[in-house]
Length: 149
Image (cartoon, rainbow, N blue to C red; front, side, top):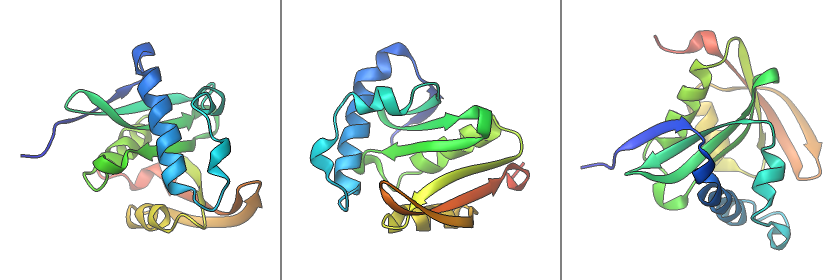
């Protein structure tokens, strides 16, 4: 029997777990960066002002999505390694997309091949490419009109 997954908005008591998810997942994933500089407090700075959707598996936070709603921009999508391949990322995206109107965008690092394949599989399209302090990335877009009713 698969674990129960719930998606909801962040509550104040989620903060310690979300900080750990953000730090741990970035350290495991962004191997092309100097991960020794990552800190727990990065979550607070990097998600300030965003709407945070939290994925709970059997009542415990296992992932989150951060969205900058004024620009329909998904800034963060992180799922603990032990909870991957269980539909959590897809559920987080689906919940967020249902709350937005119009095209939604995100950046995906060119180094993050698994994430890129994941987004493409769900119907995200590359609309541009650029580089920032973390390296080269794809600018991707999803049209909410493509959501299955």
